[in-house]
Length: 109
Length: 176
Image (tube, rainbow over the protein chains, first blue to last red):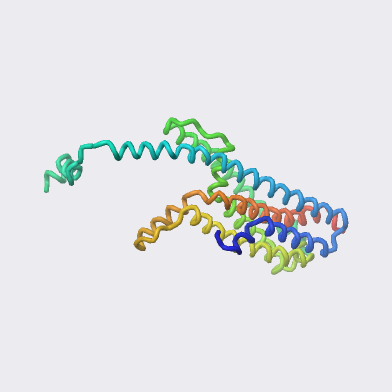
């Protein structure tokens, strides 16, 4: 979601526009006042819960993903060690040869 | 004139079947998840981690599409039948149709886009790109898109509350 449209469509302003549309429709529907107030309270409470939970969940997910970023240098260090230590090179097709030697299809061929 | 309560009465049977299936398969799914943890010899994650994993997977986009689709279906049904509160209060009904269509379109766009943003597709051969797309659909969404998924989930939830609230206040006789 890189474009300007996406930033608007998925931000808090989109939710505000949604609330305005729904409340306007309810206001001109001709409901009795207590019914309209009940709907209004429900929409407002749900909106506040949405905004609060979205901020809470976003912060929680950032906290949960933080340790992976902290551990990254250690993984890089291990990779550097793995690439610098000399290892015995495996001959080409070694595992394929072993597989043919150990299986029935190898003896048949 | 048939009321919303009479229109929804035939749905009680399928709803009872759905509750029964959920009551059987819900605990079964939990048991399967716990058995996977036992096999891997890892402690089962707390429920809050399961919720956060579900959010990071972008499931609220799918919830928004499904719920807005339900609202759209109920509203269209009442409009085509010429009965019910959403037909009677046309301004609310038409607003719900428009809003639910917008939610479905934007949530569907955002779900795939959020998956792709977290897993950019490398420019390689065509087959490799297809394989990467399949993997990306199983990957978590980008963290910045979690807020959007929660907002769209709550928008669809609010539409459902308005729809069901109208049925409830009609059943309670508050609209007379």
